[in-house]
Length: 338
Image (cartoon, rainbow, N blue to C red; front, top):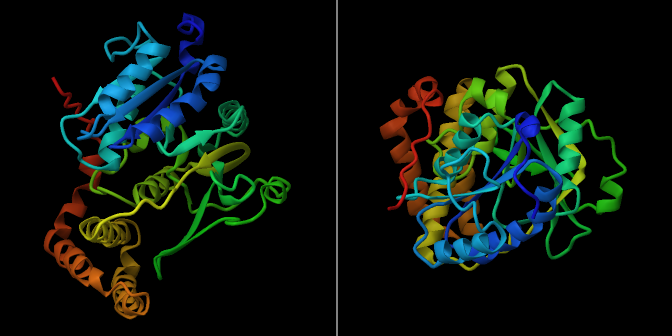
């Protein structure tokens, strides 16, 4: 591994933020794919463990000590590897915010937020850097996400379209052939960049704030995209940057299904309230009725309790949404395990 970037390159550093929770094998595969990219760029890999209750910390530490034997800490702003071990799991946004805040505090130029179930292709990072430096009006780029098990099938080209009336999203060029997609015009309209791989300007984050921690799970990237666009920035697709996304359908038990469905609905309501308030009554009603119809048709009537709970809790606590302006100015708190 190359040495720490020299001082004259510090202003161009890239922070690569990866959140782990009980999935060390996925995280290690992602980290392994990043090693060549980190060698060719002034990059720092930042892993945030969201209070895993398995052996994640030991496995990641062992890997890090093998590749970065002198740099497994967060006490210096020039390390190539930083490992945060959080005291609690406060959600996707909160976990990633620790790494993003580190990038802001230490004057990084860009931050690349990656899901831990991604594997980056060769030159994926350099392609993003080239694109964002050629288009100063773009503050957030998405990569070409492809299916890990079917690398010629595209999951989405940079991001998605989103209909706030129906709350239905559609991934751009989903299931299309990769070779065909890479021949398409790069200037696509994106409503948001897919959260599995988001490349952002740190200066833009200084202006709009961190990820919204009111979203425990889902819709963080939609909220971030709206705030970027309201601040005058644009979103982009970097088709030359290819990222393999495993997105394997792990079996979840009934309790986990309720948990995920609850947060999907709660986050939808919160996002609509924050950014499409004039549509809120119709959107919330449409989604509720659609769920009432679709869940039995898809043999998922067992999820009714989480649907009702999400709507009840949103209406009970919707006053929290009015705290958005105060929230985005707050720094991420770093509660580390001893």
